[in-house]
Amino acid sequence: MMKLRLTLLLLFSFTMVTFAQQRDTLYVWPGAVPGENVPKQDPVQTDNISGDVTRITDITNPALIVFEPEEALKNGAAVIVCPGGGYNILAIDKEGYEVAEWLNTLGYTAFVLQYRVPNKQQEALYDLQRSIRMVRSREAWEKVGVIGFSAGGSLAARAGTRFREDTYARIDEWDETSSRPDFAMLIYPAYLDKGDNRSLSPELSVDQDTPPMFIFGTADDTYGNSSLVMAGALRDHKVPVELHLLPEGGHGYGLRSGNIAAETWPSLAESWLNQWQE
Image (cartoon, rainbow, N blue to C red):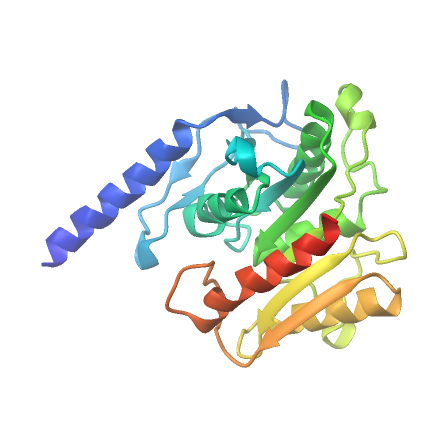
């Protein structure tokens, strides 16, 4: 029985990787990758498939996997999806491809970002900022937003608060475009409370120009304080923020059924998104 289950999980993982390979892939850096000393290569899929999750790592050639909605549903906006994984791996299906498919049902073109891991937090910010500029430059999108999970939520928050910084040397005309996302959704974000006494991380410079944010977390999440301090900082600066904190649900649930938090946040996020499309 165990052997059969392992075979099925391996087949599932292979199917998800193949599925992604069949979609358009946009590589973030046309030449040398800023801050990267390892040659460009394909991501490595880890042996860990616990929880029916496909995990990838050793990313040296950051890429956007494109998910287009049906033509009749397109709303003229795009969202970049940042999976989590502790800045060590990316839970590429549960917090990436599956989220992109959900966004497609709402009419958004979704781009799943394979940002650099492991242990490359600063370089991951380069990748997301460049990706926002790429997406914004390629088509006349009405809005370009970001959504991130766990470490991906940290990354999305950093992009939403550090868009004035020239974090990498500009390489082409796309880099003349703003890297400020029009909106951000942080789902069980982590690492936002690294300041004194678990206050907001000093690197997050919230001000009146920070984009509106939707934040969702749970009280029993080890990283739950990140949601609270981020929402407080946004409120203090009169930035539109919607915060939801459920009593339980834990961490890392994506939008898969069987978890109350996973079954709750998508409808709340959809309602919030609708107001920014009006």
